[in-house]
Image (cartoon, rainbow, N blue to C red; front, side):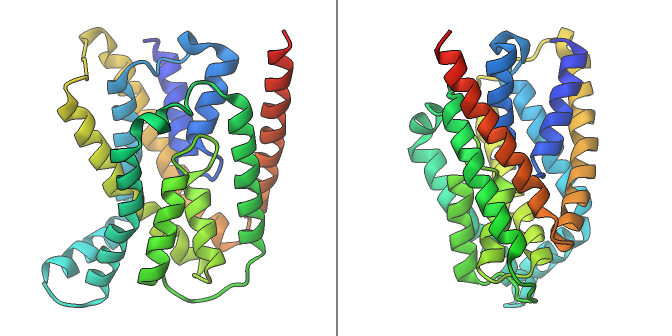
Amino acid sequence: MDTLDAIILGIIQGLTEFLPVSSSGHLELGKAILGDDSIPEESLLFTVVLHFATALSTIVVFRKDIWQILSGLFSLKWNEETQFSLKIILSMLPAVFVGLFFEEQLESFFGGNIRFVGFMLLITAVLLYFADKAKDTEKPVNFKNAIIVGIAQAIAMLPGISRSGATISTSVLLGVDKTKAARFSFLMVVPLIFGKIGKDLLSGDLTFTSENSVAMAAGFIAAFLAGLAACTWMIQLVKKSKLSYFSVYCLIVGFIAILYSFVASNF
């Protein structure tokens, strides 16, 4: 694995994990344009390393929130922190269900179907546009919201649907405060990432070679630093109602992907 490729992939993963532009969609586009061999995603270990880096960046940004949640949860009292933890658990259930029972069907969408990715990016653009126009409120996420946002997160497992874009937009359209929506969106994915990492580790499919250690480390650092920047930046953008910028971006990339798929199919 080339170190420069690892750094580039780390930056892409770190940025697109938090920015509402679909990391899976962009990676599918990259594979189609550059060729599968140009992007070392065949290494499951490398994917796990990048996901761990972005999860760690989330923990660093929200370290105070996470500490308060854990403190409240282990206090065994029905307080705000305990309720928030239960909402996080509820939001995870749809994605866990899809991941456990529809893994093969889900993987079938990741075969370089650029036209599908393009249409999903258009859906992401529409969601971001309407969320950006939503009125400001001060409402927190309730239990009903948590379930609905969890369903949005499960749908966002499709390439081209942005996870952060879908969950934040859904929360905002349900009347949740934009800053609270972004906070909930980023915190709800951390347990899922660690769960996926644990599943991959237990599968026994991970292979480590010392010759890739430098590239792995470079990719990890790049993803972690990019994740820190993107997570912090995204919170500010949501607060300032700047999601329309990403809506336009997804719209343009979506149309380019669809056009590219038609041109490529004729050659």
